[in-house]
Every structure is written in C-alpha cells, then in structure tokens.
Amino acid sequence: MKVTAVAPSNIALIKYWGRRDDKLVLPYNGSISVTLDKLLTKTTVEFSRDYKKDEIVINGERVTGEKLKRALNFINFIRRISGEESPVRVVSENNFPTAAGLASSASGFSALALACSNALDLNLSDREVSILARMSGSGSAARSLFGGFVEWHRGKRSDGSDSYAEQIANETHWKDFRILVSILTTLEKKISSADGMRYTVKTSPFYTGWLKTIKNDLRIVKSSIRKRDFTNLGKTSEHNCLKMHALMISTVPSLIYWMPSTLEVMHKVMELRRDGLECYFTIDAGPNVKVLCLKEDVKKIKKRLKELKSIKELVEARPGRGAYLSKKHLF
Ligand code: DP6
Image 1 (tube, helix red, strand yellow):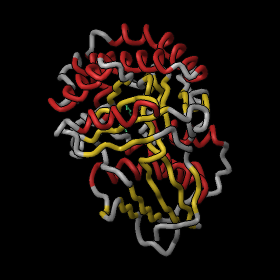
Image 2 (cartoon, rainbow, N blue to C red):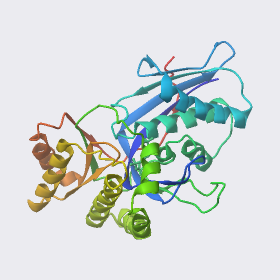
Image 3 (cartoon, rainbow, N blue to C red):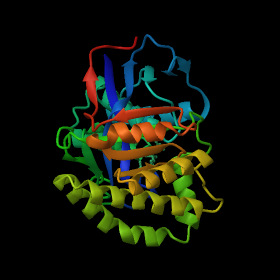
C-alpha cells in the first residue's frame, strides 16, 4: 500500500546532546521542543514486489552513499519488525534546505516512521511511533510527531520503552509565540549530530556539568510553557543553547558550528533586548539562528534582523501541528 506522511521540523528549547545508548538512541537527558508550522517534509512510501530494488529520492535526487545507508538501516529495522520483504520506493520533499541545523532529519525521519508504520499496518500508538522515530538515529524525530510544545523523556529503562515524546501543550495553546528562522547558509554540515555528540560525551570536560543543569532547565521551561511566561522560557532556552555550544566547542576535536554571521545574529538579538524588544536566540548543530519572540514585537524584530546582510532568508514560524497522514501522494 502507498502511504504519504507529512512531518514538521522542530526546534529544541532544551537540547538533546549525547546518547547513553547509541544503538537504541537513548539520550542522556530529556529535551523540549516547539514544533514549527512552516518547515515540512512530505514522504510517500510503497513496499512492492514490482520494484526491483530499494530506491529513495529526496527533493528530486536519488539518494546514495551514507545518506542511503542511514535511511535503509532504519527501513530494514522496520522490515524486521513487520516481516515485510519486498523492495521499497520512498519519495520525499522538504520545503527548506537540508542539514544546515534546520532539523531536516527530524522532519524527514518522523515522516518516514509514520509513513512506513502505516504502510506496513503496524498499528502503533502515537507514543510507539515516536519510539520508532527515535530509533531512526535522528532522536529529535521522535518529537516531530506531536504538535505545539513537546517533551522527549529521557527514560530509565535499558530497553528504551520509556524514552518517548509527549505533548506538553498543543499548537493553539500559545497563539502569540513566534520563531524566526534566520537562514545564513544552506551548506550541509560536515559532522553529523550523531558523531558530534559521541565525541562530546567522550572528550568534553564539561559534559557531567551540563547534565547536572538539565533537570532544572526542563522544569522551568515546562512550567513557562504552561504559564505562557515568555521571559523565563526565553532566558532558560537561550542559556541552555549556550551551554550545549560550550560542550561542542570544548569537544576534541572542537565542534564549532557557528560562523561569523551566527555571532552577528546573536549580538543583534542582545542589542534588540537592550532596546526593549524581547527576543532570545537558539542554535542547533549548525550555523543558522532561530529567534524566539512574541507576535506584538515580530514586525519590529524582523525589520531589525533584515538589516543584517548575512541573513539570506527569514522564515516566520509559529507552533505547528504534529505529523499526519495525507492522501496526496508524491508518485
Ligand atoms: C542539536 O540526531 O536528533 O538539534 O542532526 O537532525 O539528525 P539530526 O538530529 P538529532 O540531533 C539533534 C541535536 C540538536 C538538539 C535537539 O534537537 O535537541
């Protein structure tokens, strides 16, 4: 059967960086994200004997090499669960640049997990699909299944059955929340998050210090979401992002995902705050900066950010819905 799923990207407010189990993709710490209404991946899958071999096409290009290996690893894992043996055709389209810290793997693997689990009639609950998406290797994909504000629980069990994502508040809970995604480069990052976090856990002298701060960050951000307390949410998220980048920078060999333009946007955000426009930045494993703000200030903030020549594109996003199935297939 042919199945199409659409999944959104998400931006972490409390970051996931480091795995206690590489195979099962179990994080050392819980994380919280906001699902975006704008950056989407649409994926159609069909398992059929009519195909001679597995084929994956993303944005019109046949996938090869490491990327193909990564996706097929996941598909083969789902095959083992379901007993399906026939070849698969996967066609996927992103409406945004891939792999520049815009969580394209999150939306991509979330769409793939949802589409495959339905194509193979696995009858999974939302929670189980999030566990399946987590196993893709892009842990953050587990969070893209849900809309609004989402927590991915660290879990305690060694089999990973309690490490799943769960909604904190849906996409209509905080209507004035805005995320401005500044696109500085569309170049793909050289070191994947999976490799990066492995090096960090092994070599950063600050990793245990980071873990000590997480419980408090999660608590503050969760209660700020519930109370719609933008100041506490923004301050805690921005600081959490800086702590993660301090880990990355102190990794051997060092992981510096920032570019000069990244720092330019960070300084601009601090300048805007000094001018009374409340906004905060957050950055994932890439150079692009996401600016958190409220609807009342969005026009002014956008105008000031656009003064920066290095920003190629500024996408205004809101908390969006989670992944869903669609009848509009890509082939
Ligand atoms: C820095 O392995 O989940 O974005 O890099 O998209 O494959 P991909 O994602 P993943 O690592 C995410 C790391 C992060 C923080 C976060 O999203 O929590």
